[in-house]
Every structure is written in C-alpha cells, then in structure tokens.
Length: 264
Image (cartoon, rainbow, N blue to C red; front, side, top):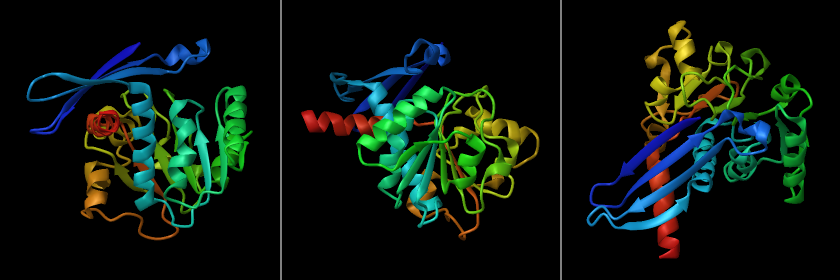
C-alpha cells in the first residue's frame, strides 16, 4: 500500500490536508483502489472546519479537471468517449465530459469484464448510450476521446491505435512505477499536463522523457496556462492531444471549501 499526504492552503484563507491510501490489489478484493479523507482547517485559529470523504472529493475533482482540460483540447464535435477502467473516477467521466462536449456515445473497457458490464448498465440507467468495448484496440480506434483511469503499471494504450484528432486523457499514472500509455502515444501529439509535478511523478512521462521521445520544452502548457490563456490548446481538427494529470492538493482545497460553505 502507498500512502500520500497532500496539504494545500491559500494565504489568509483555509487550508486542507488530504490523506490518500492506495492499494492496487484491492480490485481482487472487490474494493476501491483508493481510500482518502480531507480535513479542512481555519488557517488563523487552526480550528477544524470539516472532515470530508476524500474518495468523493478526489473522484469528482479529478473528473472535473479532465473535463476542463478537454474543453480546450478535445475537438468541439467530439461525441464518442471511451473510458478505460471501471472504478470510482471512471464512473464519473461521462457526466464530466458531457458538460463540455456533445458526448452521445460512451464505451468502457476494463480488465475485469464484469466490472465494465456493470458500469455500462449503470450509465444506461441514467440515460446514456453506453456499451462495453470487447476489444480495447477497436474501442480506442473508434473514440474521439480516450480517458484512462486505471492503476496500471504497464501501458494499456498504444499510440498506433489512436485516430487522428483524438484526445487522450491519462489519469491513473501518478507514481514513477505506473504507466497507462506507450511511447507512441506522445509522438506527434500536443502534450499538456495539470501541473509541473507531473514531470517528476508520472511514469507515463518519465519513461518517454528518459528515452528522448520528448523533453520539458515539448510540453505546451499546464491546465492553469490553458485557463489563463497563456497556452494555446488544440491547433487543428487532425492533431492528437494528450493531457496527463497527477492531481494537485489545490483541487482538493477548492472542493473542500465548496463543501464546507454548502453545509456551513
């Protein structure tokens, strides 16, 4: 098991500390791979303000960050979303992407077919046109957006499968030992990251960088750069784009403040 401690604060405002426990073997136990809590404090007095379910905060802010990036990077007409993985974050991705793109078809692939089947059925109950991708390669080739939310240590997505104009969202690799995409996914693609920490934390980036596939200068910008207009997003319809996130405690702080204000 891996345990992460993630603090964040705003000068003169509240601060939060999130503790995340990651157990990659939990899928075999029928349990989520992540468990976490968020404790929000008053920075002036140190008084605890709220103890929040970190699993819910993490899943929602993670899906929201991916959708925010896609609002700059995915083709405006992107309609078909492939979700790779069937965990807590994966389950939220269609709704998040549907808020920024006209998603009308969703497919899902997971290592455990029964998990993918259950997730697709859940989405259909909420009115989505959802199905299981029996072949990952075929599912990737059909998708406008491929969003990976796994705990994989080996690449599951090959760049040769991605269609021109596809947007690839990589959520799962947040340690050097984890990877979701092979080197070919990055060749010729516009690469963006959530924060600079991704360049030192993610195996998806560290591996290709060590082999000269791209360097730091090859990263076009962070999510903050995109939002501020300091970085340019997608350049044309046929360009492939990649967004790699590792998560940031500032997202947890923002979410925790919203929760505390809604119940305060």
